[in-house]
Length: 521
Ligand code: F6P
Image 1 (cartoon, rainbow, N blue to C red):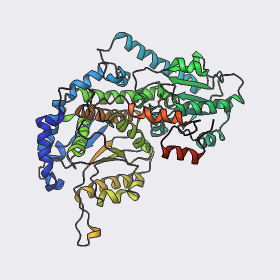
Image 2: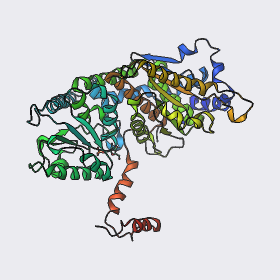
Image 3: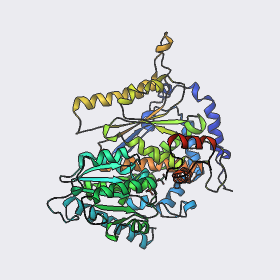
């Protein structure tokens, strides 16, 4: 049995009492405290967080901070940083922080291994971009196809899109294929030439059925034009499972290793970002790591009250566990962050969508909310109606850029004006004698302002949300680093292929018959 009992802590009980009356207060009235904007704002050079537009009084904030203290957030984060085994169900450390900046307490052997892999990533990405790798100097690859899914796709795909302005001259165009629906890969391959295409099979386990089937299809396409049986140097694998890659038919030199203790959804800091490194160069990638490390340093050293990720995490706890919000919207006002929400869905929901405590007991409080959203202003014309007048409480994170040199001044001003107007409208609402035009207001939001979108600030933003997720996992007493929940569906899908359908429940058998799956070899 765990010692820490969240619901029995005095902070939890105080928050339960405060939650009963908080809706009687108006957020706007809380600005009677002239220092609220100052007090409810945090700046880490490169990112500013305003959380003053929340249904949070000083008493609520103080109780939330006590909860974080009682749960041992600081100590638990230190254990991650120091490379301790923080993922007990897989008996592993979680080394994504160590890639950004190794703790002095990390073993020398481990630090060396991480450094070697970074040096290797820098070398190979450089050789590929310049054409040295393929032996085609002067005629490097024009296209790169990344085959991966989940963390082996979402992070590198999102970061490549967010940092597309940083693509170096001569770098290949990066394409990402994740779905086993062959319409995706067929459509892409029709546009590419095998002779100038590099295929990267990105799979930590090298056991993921979708990725391996896409790889088989893609290698068959390559093999028609390229005589080498394993399509070297047109094919590489990024994986922790060297043996499986060898058994698949790849040669040693085609394998880029990945440390086992880097979880899939945290792997964009590692060699899993090979496509991104090829595109923007290792130096820019190192800036992203440095941004992540800056957020780590902030989270490890700032006083609890000033830790940006702790505040974001605690706000989520307040709405989820005490005000019963079931979802959380994230709206980046930046089209280049268009894939950020999808990436965040895996980060938050695969990490914290759990109902078993670290010690193995069932828990009796709610955990991860549904994370959803889309870029502004598009989303304003899709689902903001519900945010303003719907019946569900949905806290919102707005994310905007102070400067954007890729945009045009007039467009950027309009984009920012829309973002700020939305947060104001959600909070203030508007009374009207016509009920349909009445906006209740008092709807909470955070606003995150990035100075600009660069590798460094992107790294900070990603580490910010990683730490937010971790803080929540500590308070909920769950392991954020495993993902057993996805295994059953994967196994059943493999079992279903080629069966006659008789061993299944009536609904499943019927669907197998109707789709022609039953009996197919
Ligand atoms: O489906 C869950 C998952 O295990 C993710 O955690 C992971 O990011 C993804 O599958 C891909 O796994 P792999 O990199 O081993 O192919």
